[in-house]
Image (cartoon, rainbow, N blue to C red; front, side, top):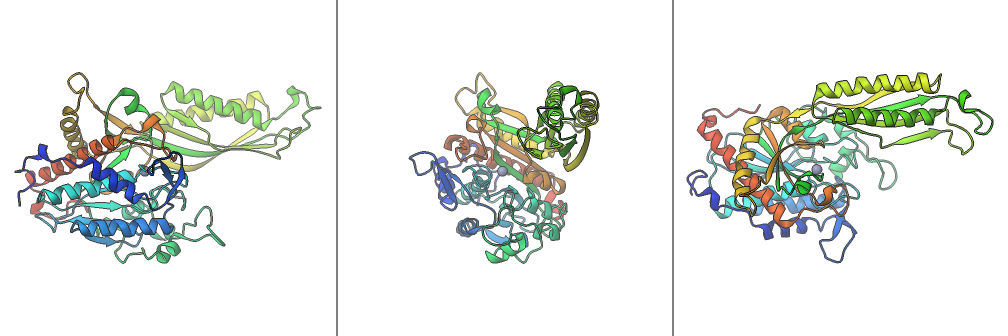
Length: 455
Ligand SMILES: [Zn+2]
């Protein structure tokens, strides 16, 4: 068996047709929302731990076994498939993402990362490459948080950041039938509550690499192929409640009003201006008003506010400016309106590990250099992820980074979500090179002289 770094690495490449075929084969489980005539022109509705998720899990384990991987399932239903390396006692390098989707999801979000991982293992297998350490793939349970309302909950349990009881007790958002099922009930129902503890201490990784579609328009707009992801932007979510006074729309002059909806609307505009001034983001996705009649102004308006920035410090400034602006709007515009803030989520900025970023960048440079147009343009770019991923949790416990591929028109969480077979394969090639580069780094720096680097 040739070892990974004696072999001619540049000649190793993933098989674009095979990757596309297996990706779409896996999408037979849970395909939905047809939008075109081709068999692949559907979206997905594969909610975590439903029957289609069980079916794709069975498919994944079968596929991994055919690649001579050792498979295991932990008590959160996370699936692991590991291909032995020369130093099989050391923690493996894992390639991970998720096979669950949004109820109106696409064929690439999460799915590409898992299927590309399997393709990398197949390339290693067919080229008889013996890596220095073991290399594997992980499918994380309920990353979307669409059915059980906590995103990346199972990598969170693995990382020790989410208590397993909290995860197991999560109830489905929309019950299929009767009363809402918990995650634990559904894990048991489909036979995927494994025996192994979901923990980085008993199941440590040497590193975690995640290939994912960008889910935004930047790579496509700039005509680039690969994002070398440096980290994930910080975000904070709030529920804002504005209380005014309900009164008659025809008899109450403007000067005498405490119009909660008008105040809330001005706050949303103010938050947008704050975000713009700091090159950050502010979004209101939910807005309600009560009592809700045409000819009465509302006494209460509630809305959500999602604030994001790549820097924790700038995000704190944005928040302070929003608080001041909201107070001013409530006190000055409509005298007597009150505003209350409730923090829903606080997620600090994530900075990925430099060794993993370096491995991805070196691989991206090599892969992109072979593409048409590479003489005149750099086809990869450093990026910050706008969305959270399982990699945010693995980053707490082992060196981690991510790779992005272009996403047609930046559309994701939508049935028409699309990344071309060529671009999927480029991403998988970068993943392959990053894993082999990191494997070589481990050997070169003597990682295999002791075996507990991650825990
Ligand atoms: Zn995803």
